Structures are given as structure tokens and as C-alpha cells.
Length: 372
Image (cartoon, rainbow, N blue to C red; front, side, top):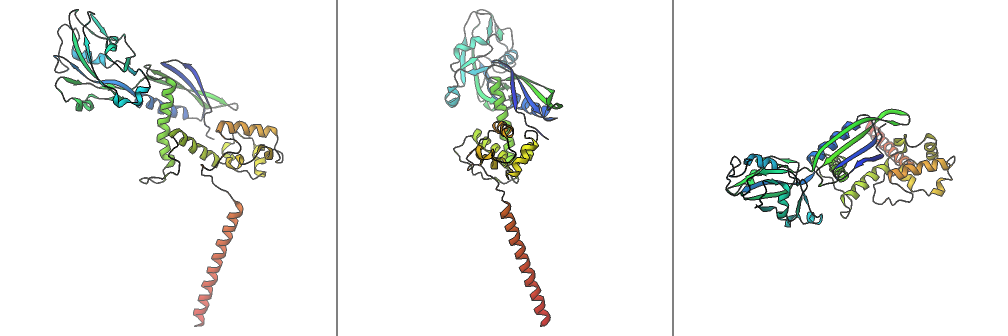
């Protein structure tokens, strides 16, 4: 029996570090979920990074700057390590209006230039690692650096950024957009009903501070759900399935509707680990086969069922809370499979009558041919 996790515990949380415990899981699902979440977290979350630089007097990445110890290649490697974040979440909605090209004049008399020295010229962005050393120079050396910032996903090599190289002196660089620094997971045995055959997943997420670990986990989960929903909805490859859901519903509500639709149409026999045999027998007597049949009942009418006591009632209520069900639900937006035994019997009898009529007609035709 495959069981679904019903307990997600936050073991540790801060701005950059998050540790989560997910249990219980069926054997093998710990590695399956851990690998999937780790891949999505590292490679498919959005962030901001530098995709080109331009320094006055420098034509390519193999040059040197007078008065600067590091060459251009070393400076580029340091610039790639800078982590950026939007100062306000409201800017994210109007991202098209945010300037992505910033010219920075470094006229300070400091010998060591850090990432924090760029903050004065970045209007909409903040630097999350201001102590990062970019270069070392002489006191009287002034620099004029232009950087290009953009929003992206994962890692983009320099070859894909070369189409921005439309001006002499503009040096494209490879970019690391991912706000996730590292993801680790561990699978441990978990006890369920005095059995240690199940697993628990411990997931540890380390970010650069531009995104909360809990938010990152939610975004990664929604990306996976979006992809798996395609397989859940599709019928035949190459054909688009038309959905009858209202367009006003957002993505999260549609996922919830699909989940509840599956639960409401499922039989109680699919949840033997949650419902006792005694309660199942009581429901069979009352001709309640699915969760959709149950939510139509009133609690007072349910307690009138033979051998259905308060313990069985409490047991059902706990399971319904976990699944997000309640008595008197509006089932109009869910595709509920109607099970009617009488209609099936009537349809079967009508089909049999038609078959008998056809046989009689064929017999009469054969008799008439013989007589002729």
C-alpha cells in the first residue's frame, strides 16, 4: 500500500538555511522525492546575475589594467560571485521598467574594491555579499565599469550570452542565476503502525539570502506539480485536452480541484491504512462507497447507521480533515462518478432484450428462406 506524507516539520529555518522533515513515505520514495526536489531547486529557480561587463580602455577578457593587480579574467571570476536581490518585491511585477545596465565610477582611494562599493550605483538592487573582494589597485587608479544585470534561471554559458556582444568592448560572461547555493537530503527509516518499513526525508536547503528556503521549497514543488499535472490531465499524446474549469481560477485552485476530484471519486478501500474495517463495514451497509457519497450525508443521519458509533465518527472526521473534505460540500465543480446499481441493471436488461429480438428476427428469416 502506497501512503502519502501527511507531516512536514520545519527543523531549522533562517534567511539562508532551512531544514525540513517529510514523513511518512513509502519505500523508495525518499530518494525519488529528494533527487527531484534537489534538481529543481538548484537548476530551475529564478535569480539575478551579471551577463556582461564593459571597462573603459579594455577590448577583451585577456587584457590588463594599469594600476590593477588582477587581470580581466580574474575580475570576471570575482564579479560572477556577486549575489543580487531586488530591494522591493513590487519591482518584480514591473520588471520591464527596471534598468538593467549600470555604469559604476570607482574613484575611491581604497586599495581594495569589494562588491559593497557597487551598491551606490545600483538603484533597484542590493548586493547580498558586500565583503566579496573584486580587485586590488593602486590608490590613484580610477575605474569606469559598466555591468549588465538580468533575470534568468539556472546556469547560462558564455556562448549563449554572446548575442548581447553587439558593441566593441562589451565582454559577455557566463552567468549563475540560481539563488540556491547547495541542497542536501538524507533518507532515514520511519515508524508507521509499529512498522519500520517506511521512510522519512530530511531536506536541507542553503540559499544566498535572496529567497527564503521555505519559499524556495514551495516554488520547486509547484514546478514539479505543474509538470506532473500534464500527465494527469492528458489522454492521448498529441491531442490537447479541453478543460471545463473556470478561467478565473488560479493555478493553485485548479490543482486543489484536481486533487479533491480524485479523492472524492476514490473508494474507501484505497485508504485501508486510515479507516478501520469496522467503519468500512458500517459504510457498506449504508451503501456509501466513495468520499463523494459520504460528504452528501448529514452527521446526524450518519450516526443513525447501524453499528456506527462515535469512535467511527471521530475516525472519519480526522481523515476528512487531512484530505480537506467536509459534510455538505458543493460538488458542482468536481466531476463525480455516479454509481447507480439499479440503472446498470435496467441498461443490462434492455441490451439483452435487443439481442433476443435480433436473434428471433434472424430465425424468422431463415425459416422463410427454407419455406421458399
